[in-house]
Image 1: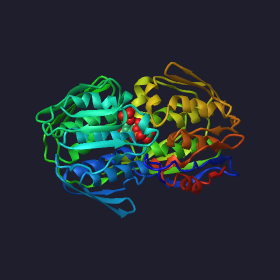
Image 2 (image 1 turned 90 degrees about the vertical axis):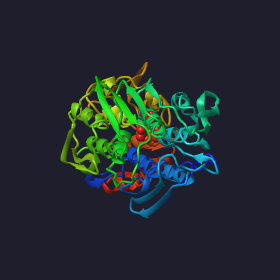
Image 3 (image 1 turned 120 degrees about the horizontal axis):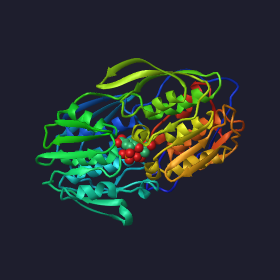
Image 4 (image 1 turned 180 degrees about the vertical axis):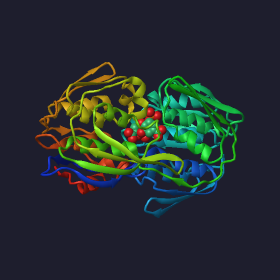
Length: 453
Ligand SMILES: O=C(O)C1=C[C@@H](OP(=O)(O)O)[C@@H](O)[C@H](O)C1
Ligand SMILES: C=C(OP(=O)(O)O)C(=O)O
């Protein structure tokens, strides 16, 4: 698939999901964690020596990061089956790219690379596909300007964006105005080449893969918990040394077969080797609050991250209220949680979803639309999403869902259609490739009926 800004738009790929003859059953693994995969390639490129990665997500978003790291001078080798090697020159030694860096659909790639480039004395231009070009970048370029780097972009801070990095970045002390691991990470990455301490204060804790992996490569990163939030301190100019990385299965990808197993009557599914970093597991807590038959087994530490297996059985779900403090730990899971809530007994409320408006699509609106067009009653009140559950009965379905270049809307809609009365169609499933290659094949393996529209 190619959906880059440089090429003509490719034909949309509609897909339909239907209630099958039987329940979903089986034991599966989902692809590697997207957040950890991006960081493994980037930090490998910033470290000295050869970083060996196992279980890398080979989805479009991460492949864009791999291309960008090559364009910046790192040797990035794909060995097959999720094994990759990255040979970096050491911190501060990236080369000026000879062409525009196309980050495709990936907000994480674009924003983290802004942080990396701000503290290199090179010029670079970033662009992306139609979705990424509409997403806000000022949230990183405004604070990063404090390093001395200069940014020029389209109106409203949209890509394409030109960066003139600096050889002598000032260290930043920044309090995040929104809960965002991407913004936190961009600031920490700029701090790698700054003299002294870079400090990020986050009022709500967000995923800490950057902090963990920087430590793994030899940096000194101190984290102080303050209420719901944290203060992160990075010592500048560390020696970053290549390190091996084992990428766990992505809990955000696992969310789709998880919800499918819970709503298709009679299903029994096990998903192995899922990352259980506590800053990523808000969905599992929420589903357990809903009374889902979801058990975590075989918990262990692999490659420095907690992982485990999830055992799921279909059954009745109760409505739930998700507090705003839980949003960062499940920020990408709300579309598919909304699908689960559509089957629940009672009315669910998800509070404080403003950040969903600036994802690959306006996910708050797209999630409400995906349910509404399939006969489920929803309301948006301010930044809250309210879903009136069907009380266990199969919702009507029969709708065609607009995916707006958003992989998570496409997969959520296809999961919904596995348990509605009439099939559900998505207008374009192509973007599923960004985070979950082989999603359809994996769901087929469980017995799901997903096919041509
Ligand atoms: O840091 C990361 O890897 C990510 C952070 C989140 O974005 P925000 O930082 O915008 O919340 C999340 O939505 C995205 O899928 C991955
Ligand atoms: C928001 C997401 O990713 P990104 O911001 O990297 O595009 C996502 O994968 O749901």
